[in-house]
Length: 346
Ligand code: PMP
Image (tube, rainbow, N blue to C red; front, side):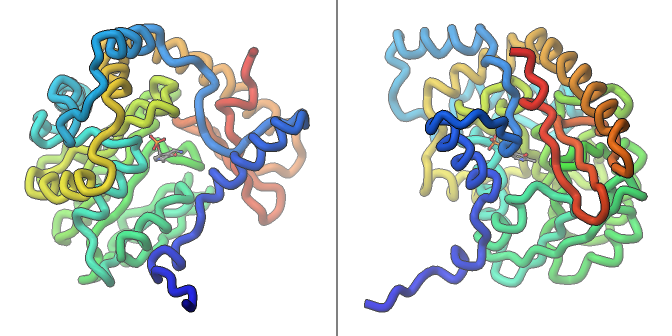
């Protein structure tokens, strides 16, 4: 039989970060001494409270299928977090989905809203997976570029020019991978003013929310009343709690959107591991001191990497406001540096 493959899968790029990371793991196994700057993951250990909770969950035989939207206690705790910390007034346990990492939250969200031919605006620089995720969901990625002269952030004018009747969604990612840029409340409010008169969704990826350096306050666009019902907020435990391998993410959205997102998840992965959900509940409820310790370490690493970049002639870079990346160039090629595992003190 002739090999006949899915056009969507063929059109989507493979995950470059995973490809490089797998190669680095293989090189390490072969005994080669290298530092992998591929995947962005904290080099810290998962907080003790999460590890102990997971052990107890195993002992208590909490090892069966859970509600496919995630266990109620975690959905309720995440909803509280969204309401109290992020001021997303409509967040309740029923509008929160617990997913297998923020990646699946994004795919569930895009699967819930995208039709063939829908345009999805992605500001560049962007996390490399977004365009492939949009393509896999049947949408068409539309890229708007923001250079270093605008601190890697799009302007309301750029957004306004990119919106068309086909725009289904705009992806925002603040703090940003790979630039480290954060939108201030005023900047988000100016973007919201443009979006208010255009009927599209806003998919706000806030996975780096807790890794910020204090210059700009984190603001969730889902807190703006004029966009109520149109913002899909993504977060999770991977970065904030150094829990990348546990694979737990969160999605908050309007209940009608959530119904479809929940179907996408229910028919694909069902739900993240029961044990990982219990560990995540403990992290969300009890690990704020661990988060602060890690944040302070990231602050020191940011200062170190910026001072080292300052010493290299002709390097242009922006001091990150959040996340653990910095992109710099010497000439025309931009390169992402992961500060999370580069300057680990082990
Ligand atoms: N969003 C962004 C911006 C990311 O950088 C990453 C991971 N690199 C993810 C989502 C995925 O997070 P998770 O590991 O929880 O799926």
